[in-house]
Image (cartoon, rainbow, N blue to C red):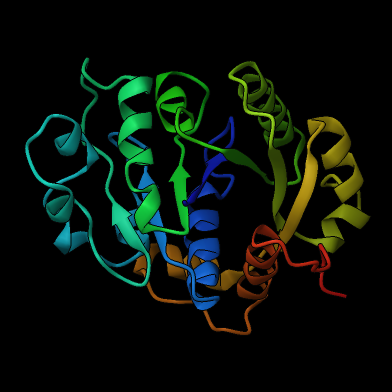
Length: 240
């Protein structure tokens, strides 16, 4: 049965989609079968980041509305993808999306749900099926506060297994007290740390082109450590 993991944050631009693709690729490198589900209705981006935009014909909304089969909706690749619908429907309910996403559990080792920003309806739909969640935050006070609010909402929904990933981390701004340090991010969110992803220019390039960052890039190595921790390996949080 798949582990179903939500990538969440109260604020846009924290790196949820980068986390989803980066950790997804790292898990496939470990021999795991991964399905990424784009839950950002109307603003989907995983198809661009995975370089499969031209293959998107149907989305998971079409599945819920019985407009296609699962085989037609899932885009096959190193990471399989279910694209987000272009528009909300009154027929999209947390119960319906949870049942749909969980229906793929026997076919995959990991299902990664890429949540939209905020903690409103789209967030609830994305979180409905999750076994665990990862809140992704950049090391600034605004994003950390929003992640704390997302964490509170997840706990209210009964999601107890929640971890923190600090994204776009840079040592120099932290030393100059322009950004929060790791301990401050943990303290202010109240979430146990899963990993730290350094700022990496290759991520920005990969995001808009869908091309893989180098295997030895800082972000790739960080996502590999996070993936190994998700599989139960005892891996240091930060590469020394």
